[in-house]
Length: 359
Image (cartoon, rainbow, N blue to C red; front, top):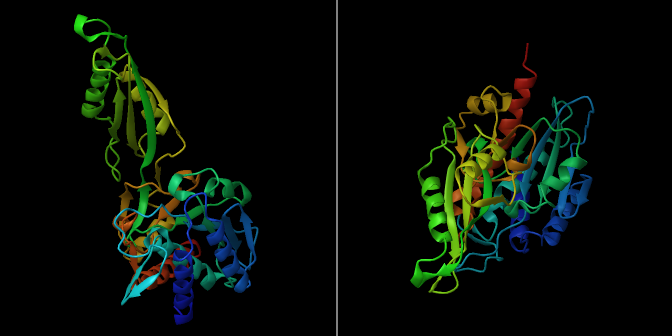
């Protein structure tokens, strides 16, 4: 990897850190990325706060591979000891909000795309997309970009995974539940206590084990995370509301999991969304075989990303550590970014050889 490519990636990351880009407020960082593309004579397209570019030697007869990461961030967590918008470099460590999630993977993918931009002999076309609203799975992020792109056969999603490849990812359903009883006076043993009805549901949710267990992601996980009922100490409550966080896996669709939960609970269940489905790429897919050739570990990811919104095979991989995401004094190491760029380049080259083996 040319040193100049690495230096450009670090300079862009420092600019991104210095520019606030909370979800739905990414106009400025979208502008920075668009300007970077133009500076390097790579025509860019933009929709909202999403920016993408296509490889120079586009061939409509070749399949399309998407390189994607996001440039939005969460808001700073409590406990920051530094200015989250000041890119501070201490030795090998670069501090700043979004440096790890997902600035490091994003600039590494951009550098990789720049490396391959003029390559005429790849057996596929490349698109680099820097997208918005990933942290909230918003409708104006990658979901709004995909209809603008030609059909994609593979997505490489840049997220901090310690350069291990996620070949499967859990989905998410957030469910609002309302248990309905009947109000009455607590002193006269009247009514039907909605809290007790909810407790029966919650106990079932806690104890139930879904029959199918994913080899890569394990069992479906359903957790009651919020509950609210009652407004007066002497009134039996007629409603009890609770929230269930469900982490799905590839043996079930989100709809199937929701239906099972509704079948076994008395409360009225409402899913906020069923679109964040789990994903898994076949073990024999050429990108997985390429990872194995390079000695990259594979795993099933418990955390959600834009993989959930991609209706085509995807893998998730990138420099940095998911454990640092959304934490105070977030950081990434420069050596991690250097390794990330090298790994992405080697992965794409190896994947290309998988598709066009030498006789």
